[in-house]
Structure formats: structure tokens, C-alpha cells
Length: 260
Ligand SMILES: C[S@@+](CC[C@H](N)C(=O)[O-])C[C@H]1O[C@@H](n2cnc3c(N)ncnc32)[C@H](O)[C@@H]1O
Image 1 (spheres, rainbow, N blue to C red):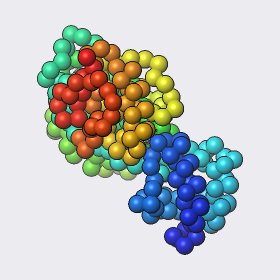
Image 2: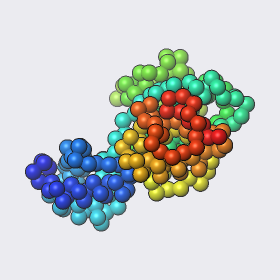
Image 3: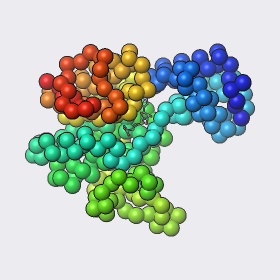
């Protein structure tokens, strides 16, 4: 078990630097206990009791390195979170035009499936590219099974149409139906180091840049803007904005932007 006393300032600095370099997430002094708690969890799983042994492990084992980065990111999400952006699309966009959509920090897939369900229910033609830096979150998205509390904001009629109820040991879970799953493709993409190879009509990049510093946010926004088609939309989290960043997008609603 790791306690605050056996993670030295140097180790804290080194681990924070590793996380920043890999994912852009800033784990400064305020996030010290978060880093210690997440590190302790990985060390318990790997049955390692010394921080320096664990640091040695992540320097030579890419799988555990990935697990460590995963452990330090916040993956919290749920269906129909901050749904105003999606409602805007459904009401305002032309149903006849096929849409290419990117859920750019999709975590375990709830955002991408929420968008897919609403567009499907409103007869849009579309496909969604869902990406994240975390392998374990991508696997959960591909599995598409969720505890019932994640779908509590889904309107009942949509819940009945687009989810299967679990049985027996899965009684507290639902699974997204294939008709929705087939419209969402999951793939690994690091917003910091990977370059988009496609362009999109709509990009959702929500509740991730909040963990980045201004310099990283600017780099990510530049990349996202270059991946937007002219007239395309970028949505960030409702507690985020592009204030203080350079861009040429037009603000169309809170945390919602359009490329000219
Ligand atoms: C809080 S979740 C947001 C999920 C969803 N977009 C939402 O708003 O509910 C943040 C996600 O960002 C991912 N993430 C963190 N750093 C990233 C990076 N550099 N590239 C891609 N994804 C990253 C994390 O793995 C995590 O799944």
C-alpha cells in the first residue's frame, strides 16, 4: 500500500511528467492525492510494494505503462450527458445530408451511443468515429454493456427501442442493440500525439480539455479545427470553453462552435 510518505517529491514530479507527456493531463500539487490513490491501485493489482519498483516496471513494460496512464485519467461519463448539443443537432441539421461525427474522447462509449440513438430515432444517416487514449475504455465501448445507472437519463421510449435488458447476473445492466452499435467504430487516438486522417461534420471533444493546460488545449483545438469540414461543428464540455485560445470558429451556443 502506498501512502503519502513513501512517494517522494521527485517521484511525484517524475510520474506527473510522464502523465503530462503521454496524455496532456496536468497532475500538479493539487492532484497529489489523486495520483497517489491511482498509483496505489495499480501497485496493489501488480502486487508491488515499492514506488521505485513500480516506476521501473512502467519504464520497461508498455502494457503496464498503458494501464498506469489509464488509471490516471478520469473516465466518468454517462448516457445523455450534456444533451443540449445533441438536441441542437437533431433540431437544426438537414436530415438528408449524411453526417460524419467524431466523439474525440469517448471514454467507454456512452457519448457516441447517445448521439447515435438520437440521430437514428430522427432518421439521420451518419456514422460515428469514437476514440480515446485508454484501451480499457475502448474495450468497454466495444462491449457496449452498461450498468443501469448509466442510462437513467435516457428517455424510456428510447431505452426500450435501443437497449436489451440483461438477465440473471446481468440483471442490473443493459446492452446497446446492434442497430446502434454498427454505426459506431471505436479506435485508439491520442489527442496529443495522433494526427486526424479524416475530416468531420461534427466533433464532440467534451470533458477532457479541462484536464489540460492552455498550451495543450491550444494544440488540441488546432488539430480538431483542421479535422472539421467548413461549416462543421465543434462541441466541448459545458464547463469548458475556447476562451483564451486562438481559433476562427464562431460561437453558436454555450460550448458549441462552428467553422466558417
Ligand atoms: C471524462 S471522460 C469524457 C467522456 C465524454 N466525452 C463525456 O463528456 O462524458 C475523459 C476521457 O478523455 C480521455 N483522454 C484523456 N487524455 C486523452 C488524450 N490525450 N487523448 C485522447 N483521450 C484522452 C480519457 O481516457 C477519458 O476517457
